[in-house]
Length: 162
Ligand SMILES: CC(C)(COP(=O)(O)OP(=O)(O)OC[C@H]1O[C@@H](n2cnc3c(N)ncnc32)[C@H](O)[C@@H]1OP(=O)(O)O)[C@@H](O)C(=O)NCCC(=O)NCCS
Image 1 (cartoon, helix red, strand yellow):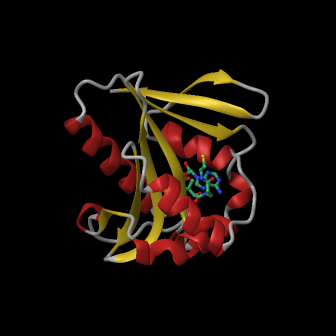
Image 2: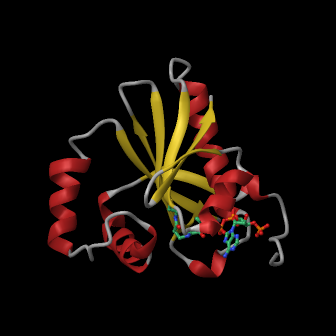
Image 3: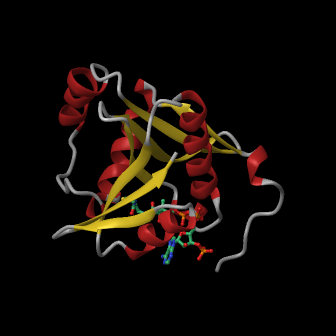
């Protein structure tokens, strides 16, 4: 385990919603981490702007958050609301790797879960899908209370009750 940050992380880790100005940074991070995601295509500026206006902004159930550490953007998380009462965690990505394993993404995930638990009492559970070889991410999710419930050919489904 690496040396943890000093001070209380709760004071320094915040979430804010994605803005248009974040797109370049998001694309850079996403392309650098593409091997960890199901869609491994390199995203071009044109593809991204189409996705942003035609899909992302038109889908009120999909919200991407930028993770801030001391007000500096370091990564992303997303929450997708499904009609069946499930909340899907996605786009979990530490963009700035110098902040790896310092507990920042874990704190950000806890904030996200709390935010949705408090505001969605009608929802049943959180779930996510992770590529089965991504042991670091699986360990990360288990640390935050997710349990493996299903193994598919390439991915593992994990859930956490609300
Ligand atoms: C998953 C990810 C966001 C975790 O970020 P992080 O900075 O390690 O987050 P935290 O510091 O809060 O959590 C660290 C814990 O995650 C797990 N973990 C993270 N990296 C790991 C590694 N290389 N090997 C083993 N476990 C690892 C461990 O449980 C670790 O705890 P430890 O440091 O006490 O051993 C980051 O590794 C990442 O961006 N990975 C690439 C994208 C990705 O895989 N996303 C998930 C797609 S489903």
